[in-house]
Length: 330
Ligand code: UT7
Image (cartoon, rainbow, N blue to C red; front, top):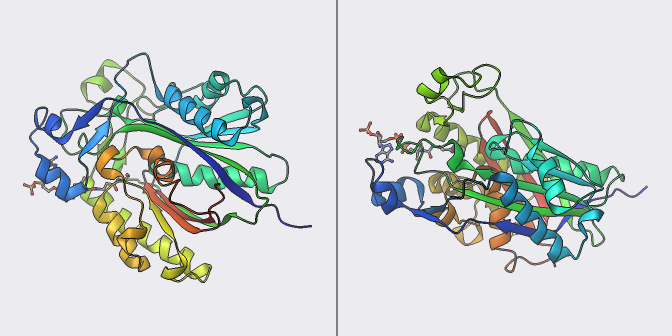
């Protein structure tokens, strides 16, 4: 029996209109535009200001755009997977809220937690539903309202993150394109170098957890930087080797957008010129689960059907990995 391959046939996105620039942050914390740009590559981020709106709102908008582009009705969606660390609620899942919001009445839906690697973990998971032959239309969404867990008095983290959502539709390939290989790793972060401690079962919300600012993201930047640089470069080189790929075979690298210096190190390790690397960190910052699908959305008119693409990410957990695919978009 011929193997069924899952391919990305459509992309959608949502970005809030409100911009938070480096100059705005200069007014909030002891930082400056030059430091932020040279250390991270970020100039501005988008912030979902409306307190009535959360991650599911952005995810549903991204999903609707992907479905519209594909010409698919919401009722035809079989599975919805959302990679997020900022769900609307601990439960029910944000994916269930999106299922209702877009009218995907025949889909089952669940969230996946792998922090900044969430989208590539979800993509591999979504692909297996297609490859099994049991499902035909799988929405994989990366969405995060990072501003909901950012301490805007902590200059080491508040400069990094932004809000946004990206969605892809996975379908069985009819033209040979699609997801060819994936490699994923995890390593428990026992030192809690990248963590949001409050609100879970270890530190349930209390006056103390609020006073101790445990509901905000906390990061040992340097330690994470070192691990991310090695992790993304190594796994990208590994997936190239395993698939006999030379630099000239790869049309695009789609790296998680956490820091321009990490992206640069990954591209150099793969032997790729920066003209082949999708970078939008200067406009959106680190949107966690959304960085990779937002790149795919921004570059969708520049990619050609069948082009070889490597996606790679590193995030809290720790989690990291790479996916090798050929582009299935129109
Ligand atoms: O997406 C998930 C994975 N996350 C990542 O991949 C993020 C990884 N980490 C990073 O991207 C970088 O470590 C940061 C951008 C967070 C920090 O850059 P760095 O080059 O590692 O700086 P640092 O933490 O070593 O700090 C250097 C100096 C320190 O001052 P001293 O001790 O040298 O006097 C910091 O206090 O820069 C200071 N600093 C700042 N100065 C101005 C830290 N944050 C700021 C700031 N503005 N916002």
